[in-house]
Every structure is written in structure tokens, then in C-alpha cells.
Image 1 (cartoon, helix red, strand yellow):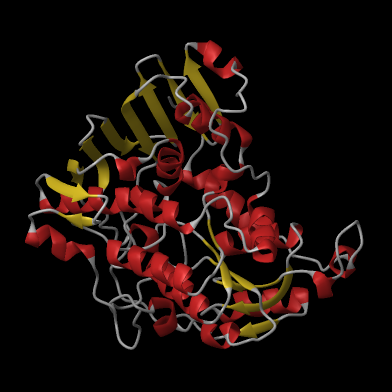
Image 2: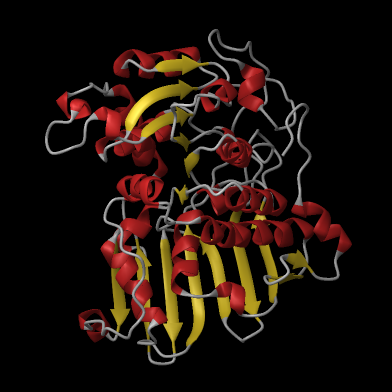
Length: 419
């Protein structure tokens, strides 16, 4: 199960991301229409909200796919100004000023997890399409509000689950949906774990950081270095759910791409986890979640590599972003027939999004599936924190018969931020 991700660590991931940020972006002749690309005046104009390592890496991909960068917003002055200087675009301290531009077609949103839905909804209301990084939100109610806004305002939404643009991931899900492993009986989803630590010692807010804007809708707390990186905000429950959602979004996305979990009837969800009581990081760790769907399918969700396995009555298929395996191995030699299930093909996640902006057809990682995958993280976290089994109705999108657990479906937002 871990073979494809052996040796892959969070440290290596962050090192690579940091290197991507350090490398300057140079405006080349392709921005003017060379190398077979359309001239800038005919290209999709894009803005970046959240100019850190992840956002910068994704945004470079959008530029490489033909996007025209014109605007940048971030609570860190140096981050937004650096992008503006390198591209000739405009830097904004307030993302709302960026969204007010009439010449902006779409935005890439790569901010703190608690900001994702707020920025996405604001972009939808401003008439902008959006590429939103995972995880989608910090509560199920936010998921629902986000989905409603995207559809209400007719926007194109691409979720940052890039594996949907990998041929082997698509092929594996097509095999499952086409019935080549028989009837699905068990599903296993594995995602890297969160980490403990983080300081709770208040520090002076660094020069050049608008800390109030960085916090946004999250409850106020003293600055303790959480906006710097490392063991930062994504392991702090005030801002995020941790890697059960932040990294879980990837293998859970493969789950919903390969199997219609929302059509299985109510789920029984129960689980345990370690929740640190010292340090700043207090999201669930070492989680062990069991989900039983009304149709009898059993699902296990736990920490480990980055992997989704479907086990059926006639074999199994395991999919990671690094590769695919199966038993019997002959499953991977199957050539799909015309009447088999054929999922949407995308070979470039950023390019697929830009194409959807032009054609007004949903991209490969659309909003409904983003919500479905995020809900798995949310209900798992709720069952763990409540310490008992809960029952989730995926049709009505509500917890059945548990008022206390249902209160966890939403979060309190800090003034003046509302959805």
C-alpha cells in the first residue's frame, strides 16, 4: 500500500514548495503570443489570492497553461509585491479590491483553510471563476454555501485535487465504475497524518503582515508565529481540520470519483483519534474511522500514505497519485469498451480550468464532488470529537437524530466576515 509513497515526507514536500517560491517568475515572450499561444489580449486574465508557496506553485501552472496574470492579493506585503514586480501586475492588500476589477476573469485561491469558502463565495458574487485549493472548508455548512454560490452565480469552479488530471487515476476509477472488480464491498482511504507541536507563546506581529486580514473569519487569538509556515495553521483547529482534510482531500477525491457514495443511503460513522492537548496544534491525529454505508459497503479511513483502494467481489484496485496496482494484475491490461464508463479526460489541471472559463463547461474537478469528498473529512472529525457513532444522511446532508453532533455542522465567524 505504501510502495508508491515510500520516502515521501512532509519535509520533502515543503522543501520543494519553498524552492518553487524562491525561483522568480519571468515574463517571457509567450505572454505576448509566441510559441503557439494566443496573445495576452485573447487569454484568460487571472489573479492570485494567497501568494504563499502553494498558491505560487499552482499559479505558475496556470500561467504556463496560458493564463494572463494581472493581480495579486495577500496579507504579506512582500509576497504580493514580489509577484506584481515580476509580472507587471497590481498588488492588493485587500482581496475585495482585486475582485472588483472588471478586467479579471478568474482567480486562484490558496489561502488559509478557514478563508477558502469566504474567498470563493466573494469571487462568485463578483462574477469571477475560481480555482480553489483544497481542503474546501472548515465546516459542512460552508461546503453547502459554497456550492450554492458557485451554481447560483454560474461560475466555473476547479478544485485543487490535481490527481483528476492524471491518466492512471482516471483509468482506475473507470475500471471500478465499469464493474471490472465486480460489486464494491470495501473501500480503504489513507492520507498522511498531521503533526503535534507549535508554540502558544504570543509574539510581535511581523512587519509587513496584516494579521487581522490573515485571520479573516477565524476566531481571534494572539499571533504565535502561525502565519510563517512549518508546523503552522493547517494543524490548528481554529483555522483548519488538519491533514484529515488538507491531505485527505486527495485520496477522498479518488473515492468519490470512483464510487457514488452519495447514492448509498445513510452512513454510520465512528472513529477514534489522538488530539494533542499541549502546543498549538490540536487537530485529530492517528485517526481510525469506520464508515458503514446502508448498502453494506464498509470504508476504513486512516493515516498513512496517499492511497485509495476499492475491493470488489472479483478483485481490487489501489490508486495513488504515484501509480496504480490491482489484483488480479490482469485488470490493468483491460482496454475499456465504448459502452464502459468513460470519465472526463484532463491532461493538465490548470489548462482544464482555463478551458472551462472559455467554454463555460464544468472542469474535471467540479464543485459537487469537492463537497462530497470534503464531507467525509468533516463527518469523520465530528464523530471523533463527539466520541460516539453518528449517522449521516448524504441525500439530505444532515446528521440524523443527534442534536449535539449537528451543532458541529457550522462554525462561528469573526466579525465582519459573513457568507
